[in-house]
Length: 349
Image (cartoon, rainbow, N blue to C red):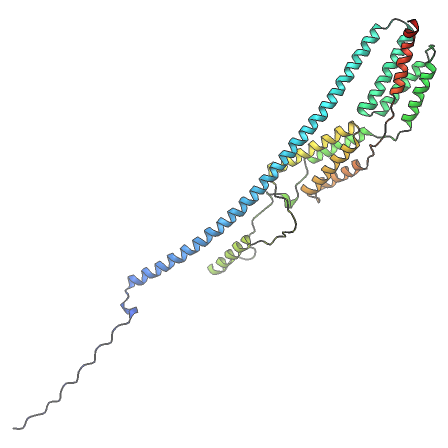
């Protein structure tokens, strides 16, 4: 019996191993995606926080500059107040001296005897004293001229020897006053009043106003999708962070509404100081105050505004006025009148 030859079974091939992606479960993939999204959001938030910090630092620098400008304006206000106080003190002292002299003259007038000549000469002396005070204190040429003419007319009734010489002194002073160039102080004072009224309405220049700053808004049609909106907002943020400026020119810090109020108040104080200089015929002080006002108007206020143009026109008119008038000294005439009145007393001794 022959043996059957049975073929040996062929070995089976091992099944292929699955890849690493197949070994990841759905949960692990979800966690990986969430972690990636969280990391992206954290980086984006950190970037935005850095941008906000830079923007806040820039705003703080602007506020600090405006605060320094406010302190400068307050210091100028205090300096102007002290200067005005000094001028007022001088005027008050002169007014007190005038009142004291007037009281002395009134007392002397009461003590004068009933002599017609003595009474007349005392009246002339008082009128001459008033004329001298008008010239020295207020520079009022018209009032001094009227007083001198009154004294000259009164001396026509005097029969005392020497009254003709005194009248000649007065006539010479009258001719000197008439030869002076006329300075209309009242018209200049009215122009200062108009300028003070306009100063309250002067608008600030656009580049000086902190309230005039507005954030830029994107123009054009609405974004068609989220990506376009994202890139447009990103570009807007970049434009706000980057700004090109000239560093070779100094710029004034911006002014808030409260600081613009102090600018106008300081401007009015300078104009009041100019009025005091005008009334006291202080040519240098008047020019100095007008120059300060012109600088402030051109520096802080809108040159295109109608109020600013009106103010500049008034300033040009005031600057063209001539206050440099050398007033004559009539103290010699007053001294002659006093000597004439005292002559009878000296002769009686």
